[in-house]
Amino acid sequence: MSESEIATMNLQFLIIDPQNDFANPNGSLFVPGADKDSERLVQMMKRHLSKIAKIHITLDTHHLLDIAHPLFWVDTNNKHPAPFTSITLEDVQTGKWQTTVPSFMERATAYVKALKNNGRYDLTIWPPHCLIGSLGNNVVPALLDTVLDWEKSHISLVNYVTKGLNIWTEHYSAITADVPDPDDPSTQLNMRLLEKLASADLIAISGQALSHCVANTVRDIAANFGEENIRKLVLIEDTTSSVPGFEQFGTDFINEMKALGMQTAKSTDYLV
Image (tube, rainbow, N blue to C red; front, side):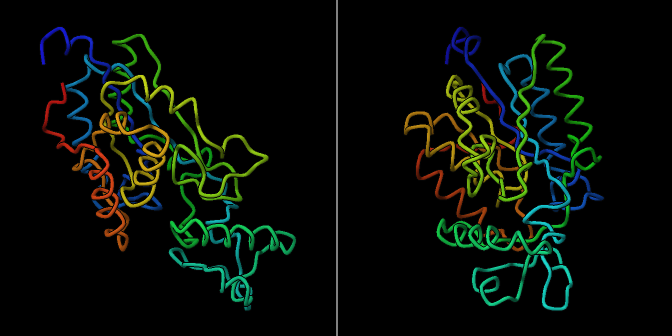
């Protein structure tokens, strides 16, 4: 690649949910390794800072009452499920789990059925995380400092993308919710983000968690991008980790996307 090509290359970073609840050891849903992932990402971005044309950061953002949080559900003894409980369609249909608010039951049952039909995951109950207004919702400090430096040096804005505010659906992907709500545009296809990413020559991808939010975001980008654009995607492998117990999901995702043309790199590599 010539110097002129490097100078004009549109390098964008897509950083998925780099938040305290995932990447700080004291976070409510800490992903082991995410703290070191963040450190490596920061060092990589500092080396590329002058060459980054755009930074996109997604923010998982939830209410305490959420279909994937314990408060939403109770068992026959009126006890809320423990974090990491899996709730299947059979569990709901047999009454093993019911909604805490009885009037929610019909819609919640339809949701769990839709999850089964889309074949990605059963409903997982997570520890309440990335709650609106909480410290856990914030970007990890070292990364925040780095992106603020980028904003200052480029006189530009980071593109922050929130997801997860709708309590009726999981929203792992920044492109679309697991089950889009027809009455809520924020759960539907995020064409604005897709169009911005399509303008890039190279998209460096990082964030948490590899097995869930990273995997589903990238899959949904690929599904709407076309073969040539998929080759723009570069997963920075040592800056993302899977939720414990879901490591195979992360491995399967990488193998699947590499077969479609996604590239991989290390944080020590120079992209341009």
